[in-house]
Image (cartoon, rainbow, N blue to C red; front, side, top):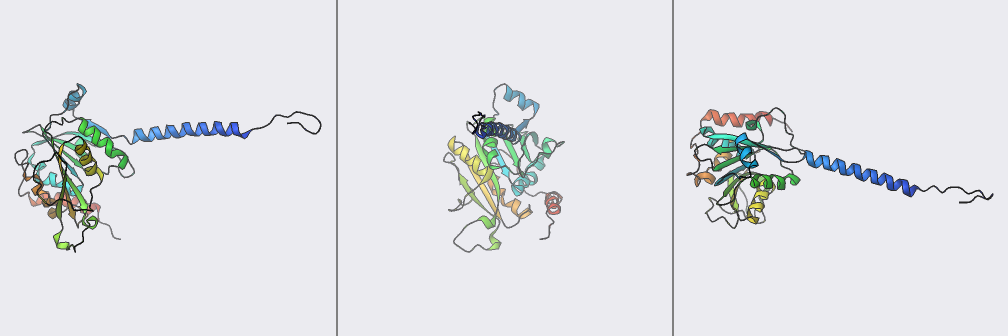
Length: 279
């Protein structure tokens, strides 16, 4: 650029500096996104025996995989199944998201996502999930867990909690009818569900839906039992509703038909103390 007196001046261009700033910002954004993805990664922690087997390229021999998602479903297993002391905690999953923080110092049995193996039949695996699994972690969890299992002749049973307020029906739903079960299954499942199928337009969401979708794609026999309850926290009536779902697995696992009152109180009281809120 020239002045009126013929002096030549350099032209200042903001375009170059803005491009450099955008490049720096993009690199910074990528680094933040990369760190966030690493932080939100679902991590599986197995016992030394299983870790060694998986490291060698072997998958877990599994004939039945029972997954309980939600406080009622998970505590149903604690009350009616795990009290037999015939189960070993063999692993747990840890994850970080906006509603779930992995706490340091917890053992596998104290984690919010724990895996158990049946002592009398090591091919039976069970998992309790009481933590929130974010949408971007559902695929991770499903891929990593099922990547550790041998799919041949695998049968999957999913127990899930849901509020009766989310149940859609054209008929009047009396409160006395809750809790109740509904089922969905994959095309590879050839058994007879113990309850009615989930009616349209009702759907399942979250981890049960991710597992059902994964198993449908890979032709794994899977059935999901969703319990609709009018109680937000675990209670004995809702827990007992899941009993028919595992009756057909009687050959694989043993249910305690009548758990002690002390055990029922133990699991119900824990939630009642945490949920003592006045609105």
